[in-house]
Amino acid sequence: MLNLISDAWIPVRRKDGRRAVIAPWQMADETLAFPDWPRPDLNIACLELLIGLVFLADPPRDAEDWQDRQSPDPDRLRARLAPFAPAFALMGEGPRFMQDREAFEAGVNDTNSPDMLFIDSAGGQTIRNNADLMVKRDRYGALDPATAAMALFTLQAHAPSGGKGNRTSMRGGGPMVTLVDPGGGLWPLVWANVPDGAPATPEALPWMHRTRTSEKGEQVFPQDAHPAEAFFCMPRRLRLVGGEGCVTGVVQRPYGTNYAGWEHPLTPHYRQKPGAELLPLHPRAGLFGYRNWLGVVLPAPNANDTARRARVATLWHARGDRRRADLIVAGWAMDNMKPRDFTFSRAPLLDLPDETAERVEGLVEAAATLAVALRGALAPVLAEGESREAAREEFFARTQAAFEGRIAQLTAVNADPQAVARGWLDDLRATALAIFDAQALPGLAERDIRDQQAIVQARSVLTAAVAGYGKLGQSAWGALKLTAPERKRRKSA
Image (tube, rainbow, N blue to C red; front, side):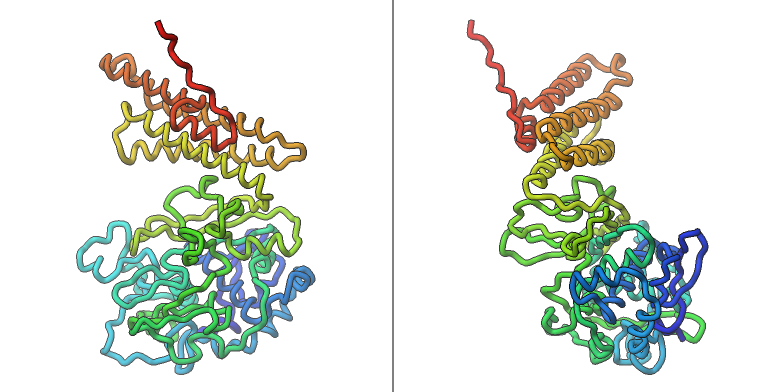
């Protein structure tokens, strides 16, 4: 059966478009572009696995070592990974990759379909209630060993709530994953995200010893394990079932390892208030746009440590690399145990001084405020709920390119922040009114006179808000550090 270190099992796409299957040490082949699994969540998890393997076996000591070793070296990587092969068998009598060391007794637990390894599969209660509308059942009656291994890793790394005693991942259910991508293919992408550290031994992996269970609320803190366990956590107690050719089932027991206090290097974190517990960030459903950038793509200015980019995003600049890089942002948006959407986006990775970051924060805040104004102005046209929310989402999507243009102006030599702020107001005004008019003007002449008056009044209020009048207008202008116009007083008779 498959060994995840010595065997070729990872599907990849080459830069010339051809496809191949590689062993992990071959990730240092400079002709490779990206993993090529049939699902985007497996591709992201595969990148996490490859980064984790390098961190486990041969991480950079410091920034200088990281700089010196940017060129791919497959032979070195193969030699460093080889000692870990005994810990990476998928099946068999000995230790199994990311599976409970204890061989569960047959008949004690139900054997689940391998479908359960996928986050968007239906759980047992969902199937019993015939409620699997957005999640699916019975898609994978059997899995080839490679897909089963990748799905197993993905579940352990991203596990949502799974019923009594079935723990979420170290980062909670459906964490946000952010990866620095400097371009140039698979190896530069992997190497850019490997934290500094010291190599581990196979014995550091959690499945190489008895599972640290959590029946009585026991927790595992960072000081209790090697830092590489951030990449190889085991919140779920699982054993794969199958033969030589495929995996046909999964047995699960409750109360796997309960992690606390960990800061995963690939995930942004935040505090609800200064001094509170550090929590992993989770993606929202829908487009990941500029309104979500602070604390993820951009450092949050003067945040009192309440919003923190992923460690690898900070490391990219700290290591002295001045190349332009993107940030891949991905992950399952969850509603408790239910997956809503899988996010996969790219944004420019920026490192700004506090003063500029504050200006950027103001651009975002002004847009959010005027999006509320637009949503309210559409009340005479659209019913409360999804329709107005869709218009608000359209507002952010249609101003994305303009926002990136204003960022470029802010970061240019001899930038004029006041001019940028006023230009951004022009962008927001044009977009808000265009969306309003598209919804309100068609068929206006056929409407009741009172509806016509309400629509005209709503447009007037929206226009005034962008011009700095009213509570929302003053708030938007204040965020941009602009002086809102004084409200004109009526002359007394």
